[in-house]
Image (tube, rainbow, N blue to C red; front, side, top):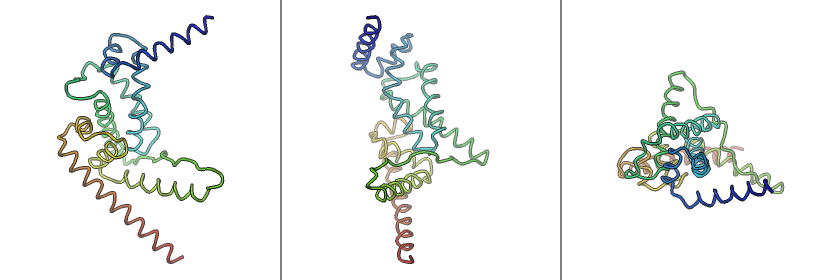
Length: 209
């Protein structure tokens, strides 16, 4: 009976938190409610992690950044201003600043991101060749995105891979919407050029073979 009571309470808390906005959860979290932090973390952790992963290509860095973002939220969540936009964009902005600092530190130390992540989805046993081809294409896109300058990479990741609106991206990147649009257009053009070049090389290799 006690075990069942815990399950019921947990479900009630989850249903209660599901109806609250991010800002409501943040206010409750800052007031000391651990359940509110847990709900907010479950709601936003995956998106922050994917953003960091797609920006760096490193599982280790993405995990570190995600943890640091929510530690920052615990310590300085009162800095969030709901009049400036959504909490999700605020979290992207915090993650972005941490990633840029990490990238700058790695460049100064002569290190590059390890690119130890982003594998394709596994196909069935009857489609091994198709799976390999699909993963090769995903790998090419991943490497092309990672090769973009950070200022264009972040807009492509947010708007195209994370499906964030221009307005939300502008808040996360602390720039006008028009700047997001222009950077995204430039980033897409650079990405198309890189992928087009790789496709041409692949076709040339096939003709030689």
